[in-house]
Image 1 (cartoon, rainbow, N blue to C red):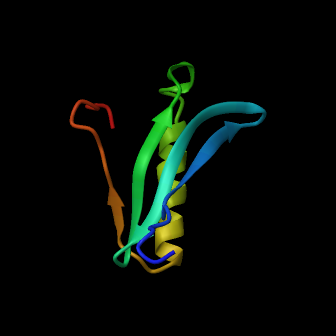
Image 2 (cartoon, one colour):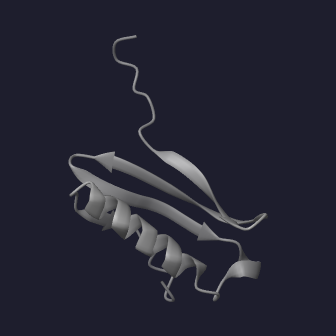
Length: 79
């Protein structure tokens, strides 16, 4: 249908073996690669998982030759 916008973002679960440890939302818009959401469940924080996820996103954006935009909540002082 004309005028109907389809979602351009995709939420992905983050796994550590068989444990679901969080999720992320990635999308490309306006020639930029966005990490719109990244959430690591509390029990898995401070274990380097977020760092690994961000490194993977940097690699994906670089492979597509797109600038990367990260959204970080102001309250997230440990990001």
